[in-house]
Length: 306
Image (cartoon, rainbow, N blue to C red; front, side, top):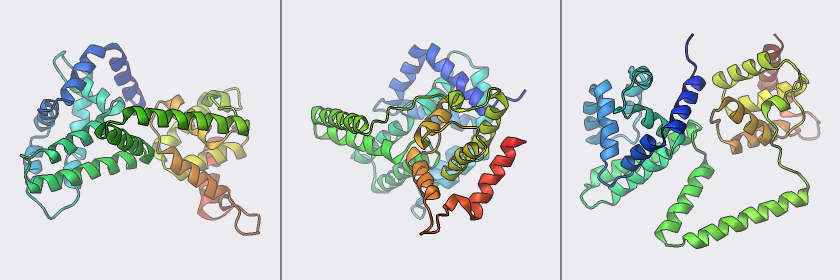
C-alpha cells in the first residue's frame, strides 16, 4: 500500500519525539554562524541532484532575474523527494535526513533560513551582487512559506516583532505588550460570552458512522486546499446536515488537528467565508447561492453523499 503524505509526516513526527538529542544537534548546527549546517544540507542535495550545484552557481551570477523558480523547479522535477523518503526509511545513524525533514516540517526552518540570509547580507565580506540576490532570496522564502500554507502573514509579523525586540533590547517591553494583548483578548471574549470551541472534528460530525465521511473530507483537503475550497466544504457539510453548528475558526482547527496537516492561513479562510455569506444588496441572496460558488458547493455535496 502506498504511503500517504500524512502517514509519512506522522512518521517524521514520531522520529522527532523519540530522537530529541539528534534533532537538537541538527538544529544547533543549522544555527551556527559558520553556515556548517546549511553547507551539509546543500551537499546532501547536490549528492542526489548533481546538476543543482552548477545551477546555483549560474543563478548567483545572473542579476537579470528576481526570482528563483529555476532552482526550485530543478529539485521538484528530480527524484529528490523519493530519494529522501527512501533514505528516511533506510537510513543509518549518521544521516541528517530524518532531522532535516523534522526541521523542515515542524521546526523553525523558514525563520532560520531568513535569519541566515540576513546575517550574510550584513556580513561585510558579502559583495553587493550577492547581497542583492540574498535579499531577493529572503523575500522569496517568506512568500513561498505563505503560498504553501506553512506560515501566515501573522506568523511573519510576529517574527518581525521578535527581531525588533531583539535588536532594540526591548524583550521585556515586547513580552508585556503580548501579555496585555492576551488579557485584552480574554476580556473581550468574556464580554462576548463566547467560550472557545475545542470540539474535535469527530465531535463536530453529526452522523454515527464517521469513517467514510472523514476519509472523503481528507480526500477533498488533499486535492482542494484553497481558502474557498475549505469554506465550500463547511457549507456543504452544513447543508447536508452532517456538521454541527460551529464557526469557521473551530472548524478550521478541527480539520488541521484531525488530519495533522498545516492548512492555508485562517485569516484568508475567514475572509472568504464572510464574503460568501454576505447578501447581494437587498436581494437576500448570498454569494454562495449562485454562480460558480453554488456549483462548487453542490459538487461537494454530491461527492459527500455518494
